[in-house]
Length: 215
Image (tube, rainbow, N blue to C red):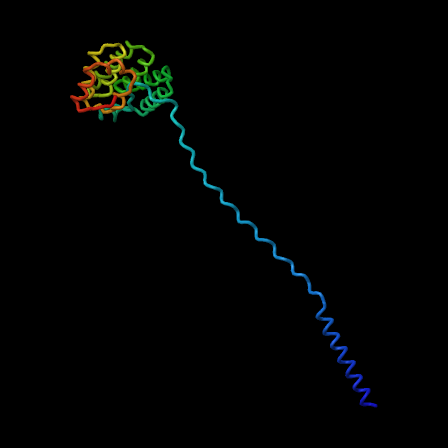
């Protein structure tokens, strides 16, 4: 009888332990939170091309501008203030502001009376205003100061062409090329040369100096 009771107690204990094990298996597990999605990588902004530099305020005027005397001795003597006036005058010329350009070139001449290029540039401004007598006076004074300034002689070509004095224009063309003038685009397209460019001697003079330009 005692053995039977012991067996029952053992059986109940086993059942109890077994039920505890099962209940532990059925216990719901805590939910695992899904990891947050990775943050999108910051997009790299496409590099923007650099803006082009501003264009100058207008195309260069007809005839030829210069920045400094072609005489190296004179160039060394030109005061800085006169050079600044020269550059400002050129800037006005590019904007076709002839009056202010003339004022600046005049100031440059006052500060350095032997500034041959200032005379040449002021003459160009006068030509654009059709003040041919004043342009002539300035070119003559520039050549007196520096007879080897090729640009001055080129501007004589333009001035005489505008006045339809073609023989003189051709003589000046020969002289400026002899002195080394080499802006062949100007010889080809400068509107101030339209009259002389039609003359049959024009190309002959160019060929004499081994200069060949397209029509």
